[in-house]
Image 1 (cartoon, rainbow, N blue to C red):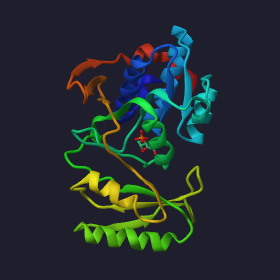
Image 2: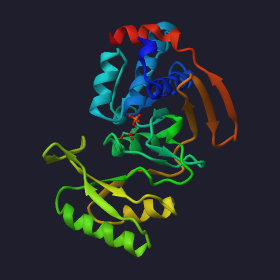
Image 3: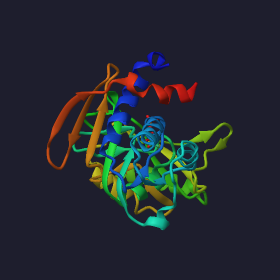
Length: 261
Ligand SMILES: O=C(CO)[C@H](O)[C@H](O)COP(=O)(O)O
């Protein structure tokens, strides 16, 4: 089964596998959402089974709650534990300062709450997610359904006042209906092409009535684990400046792939 993973999935898998080496017994963990985070949940469950780790998890979406529980992990609510030692999550883009765009999987609100409640956040990603400037990936903004078209117009006006050239805003759909997040909100995707000042944009967007949260994660991520399709992994720590290169042998995780069969 391992040999059948596409290079992109292999890259996601090895980043996920390397990230769970940071987990220690007794930790309270935040579990992200998305395909890379799903590999991480499976790798974490493998470590819990094989190494006897005891961890308590808080998930960032109903999808991740379901996956984590089906893998045998203990999942509680954030209010049960209040603070976390570590969150591991994917991202849609990251820059050299480890600022992120998140929310492609529609879970940015819980993801930001959980990451902010954590002593440390590790992002796991395939190498294609690294960008010189954020913004090629449309920026998700979670909004209240009430008056969403007015909120959209206010966002467009704000982008205009910030001299943002590309400011196409679209409502994310799920089939014929607007997609609903786990909290019942809508998502607007801002196709900006490039974001000159992500810190400013993140602050300004959250001032608009109707905006619940935006997908810019500024100064939240501490470490990025970048996977390559050939198994190579780079760990970059923004606080220490440390960069470590290594590799993950995917064949050592045969059980994970066997479970998927
Ligand atoms: O932010 C997210 C979900 O809201 C995901 O972490 C992000 O979309 C990356 O997903 P994937 O690992 O599937 O590429």
